[in-house]
Image (cartoon, rainbow over all chains, first blue to last red; front, side):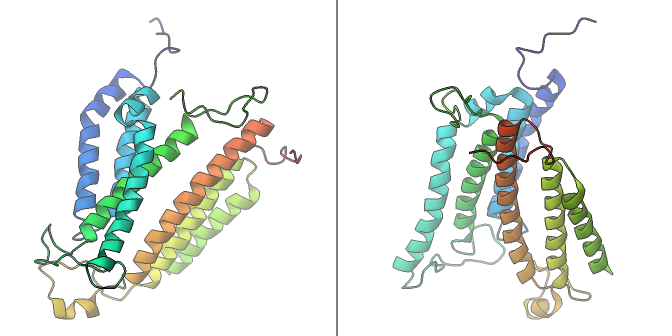
Length: 165
Length: 115
């Protein structure tokens, strides 16, 4: 059998691509479940954020870096990183301003136990943390694998060519 | 008894750090040792015949605090795992930069300080 040329093909084989196409949405859904039920069962913001980042990494491993950048551009990931951190800070400051003088106070009414909408600001903090962790991990993994360091002879050495991605 | 297994795992990680020549293997052995420490910290909070520290509608609230294992080491270890992730990512980036500079991952050949 003739070998297909692999220089122009990004990512992995057709089988991996097909399975990824089916499974990737479920991984994102599972990560969102872990985040949203973080106050009821084990998980929370960090674990759910890692699972979400793994979903995006699966896109990159199976299809190549262009598919990842099409799904989540690096500038968007950078902005989401800051949005997650600022959202967490905003929740804490709102606890200070609205809740009555204590930083990071749980000012939303706690609600009925063991329901999805309960426990005050904890689900919102989980969402903020998950957004930040997912964006950060995608950026870290892209920086480790996709970005290149320019050669020593060029005018800007040790600058990664982020514009190409 | 389980603490001895944690010690064995930590020694495996330390053996890897001390004897391996490939830089990536050294970093991975460091991650193994870090996992051993995290497991040990979680095991310290164990209580005999204790339940997982997750409240649910089935567990009566009054006896929950007396019957559950200590959740505080678990929360601290979660933070420690995140810190370990950050350290691992940074050390991998440093290893890649060393590879770009010296052309090898072999630590016996990376012995020139360059500017």
